Image 1 (cartoon, rainbow, N blue to C red):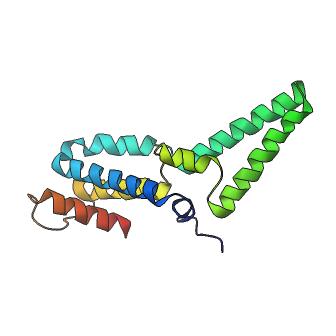
Image 2: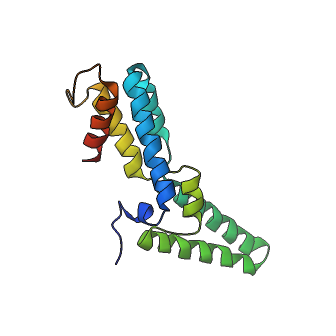
Image 3: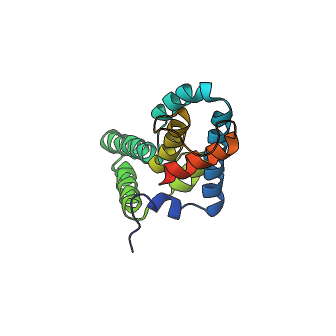
Length: 152
């Protein structure tokens, strides 16, 4: 069965890496619950962050272009490179996995959904969606509520 677009990369990523990414998101939200003055700056950083899909697309197009140019000017054998890259890109579109995915995930590249969870949790903390959770002084619980709301 073909996994959903949202779940295909996490399903093809090791549990260890998925848990590490989730823990980093939770820690970021906890830190920003304690230091809300930094939320705006971090939201700008999140808006500039490349998700794994964009990274794979840029990587595939660069390798494909290089392979075509080398095939045209050096040796036709180089045309195997764009053929392999496009096959892997198709495999990723269907399964959510291709050879660069485990490497990129271990390097910390996240899915759009993972970035959006952090972004929305920070917006909850900032008050964009109204009041949440317990008393304002209870930062850790506020962070937990923010993460929970962002995952809905």
